[in-house]
Length: 243
Ligand SMILES: NC(=O)c1ccc[n+]([C@@H]2O[C@H](COP(=O)([O-])OP(=O)(O)OC[C@H]3O[C@@H](n4cnc5c(N)ncnc54)[C@H](OP(=O)(O)O)[C@@H]3O)[C@@H](O)[C@H]2O)c1
Image (tube, rainbow, N blue to C red; front, side, top):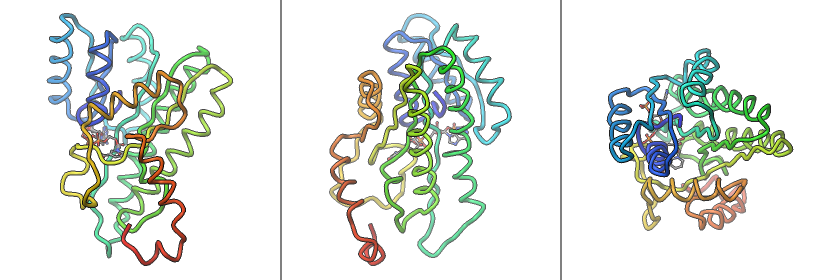
């Protein structure tokens, strides 16, 4: 699980460990990863989790780290890319450096990790890839243009991977959460009356969708209806409202 040190990735990693899988925890904050590893192992009563400290901006390191993880786990059935950032961007701000950091974490890292997964799984003719995209990729909105763009690109990339890999027996799931109570949305302006779910609930729904062989899962499912409506908003109207 890439991005296993907090939020949705942490919840997925914990759930995989709880269900009996061996799991590799990948992210930058090694102390946090060590705590999560210790808790997964203590709950299981055996060693199930391994920690790999890695910055996804270091795309050159991915192929060898990917291989090391597969070897140390004794195989690989599932790769989850949950790493991501959403730095606050003011409505009158067009911050190229900040934006390119968002591209690295949300998109370049995903391509590096999931290309490695696709290569391995297509040769094995088995495996599951989960990419954590977002409802935010369904439309370009005023709040955070590059966050929207990275998620749109990630969703399209995952769709293309799925079209390549379905014929090889590999499952590719695009997960599109709405609001999940994690550090990512701390302090972000959230619309009133929109429910925020727990990372555990998001993780359960995402893992259930992957097990069912779904292609795209909105989390929770009612976001599919909401985003159908948001996609239908005419462009001239979207220019006038703060959706
Ligand atoms: N929370 C929401 O409402 C929501 C909604 C839709 C989609 N999502 C998506 O869900 C995914 C997980 O986010 P979250 O909500 O669980 O937030 P989070 O708690 O902030 O988790 C983000 C994870 O990404 C990792 N990460 C960020 N930059 C990284 C880097 N350069 N190298 C390695 N790991 C990096 C973080 O680890 P380190 O900091 O330790 O490196 C952390 O494990 C993201 O892709 C986000 O866009 C979230």
